[in-house]
Length: 283
Image (cartoon, rainbow, N blue to C red; front, side):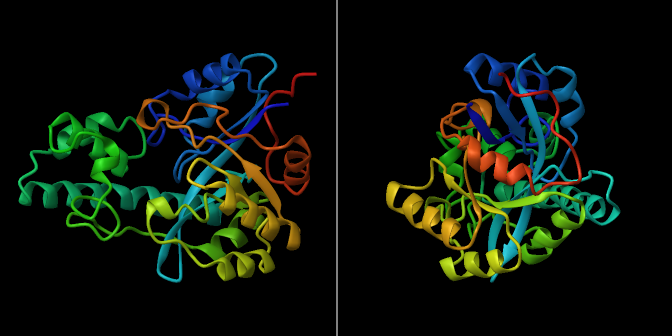
């Protein structure tokens, strides 16, 4: 089985609609795909309705979190989307994205970049985020690529036009996901290319607090980093996942670029009680 547990659609900052994403996942030869848009579950209904035969959909979300002053992402899978506490937190996370994005575009204009909020909002079919602003910057000729926007010069963490946002405490995220019957996996925990990361000791503390897994096989992790993370996962009884972090045309990461071993996947979903997978794995 080929299992990809981290993808994005137009419900957040991907370029495939949820329906297109599941069709593309099937065409790529995946057996299982998780839809994990940022801070929202709004794409799940469309993805489920379009699910090709033989493909299993794992409902999930990538939560914006913070630990020891560092921004990080927590993947939650198979939680009850109606659980009140987690639903309120998703709403807070989503609602804060709009004023943040508006302020970033205002700062960009002050810096001489002709990026309008109206254009950013047009590019964001779902939850607005920095990738939409970066796309508008490319379109306006401010930078050549989306990656070029995520620097100290522009909208990268700590950059001239960067604006902070509401983020969930990472330990609270694990607790809330569990309370909603889901499982929690630390996304790309040592992706140093993206900026500051928490120390490995923080991953251990999260494991001791009940973290279910770590995303090991990710395009931002080199071989040595993957080996270290796999060792931490094994030492603390966590699942080691792999995934593409697919965003469609916005990132050069095709579906199935990295995958999760079937036995690791089974161990992960066995811990979930909040929601069920949709569809059935191919025989």
